[in-house]
Length: 76
Image (cartoon, rainbow, N blue to C red; front, side, top):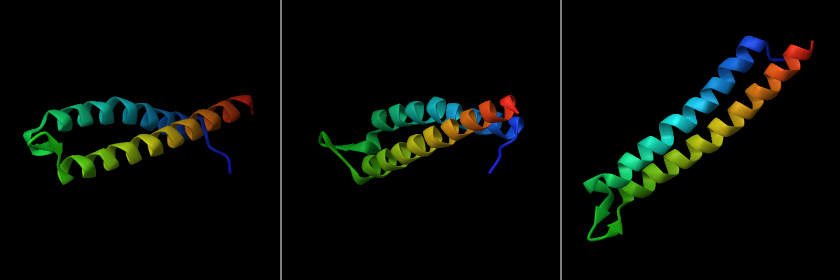
């Protein structure tokens, strides 16, 4: 499968956006009163930790694919 340069840049931008958005989101979740009950993590925190982690992993994979696609299209 070939990815155009434009699509490669889009996927790369998505990966970068994930790394800008999700750490900030998780930092805000950690500060939320809903995340803690008597000093112990609540299900709210765990669910959002899983969501943020999966999103960062997928964002990284998509960004790497975008970078590789962009570089391959630039060589052709």
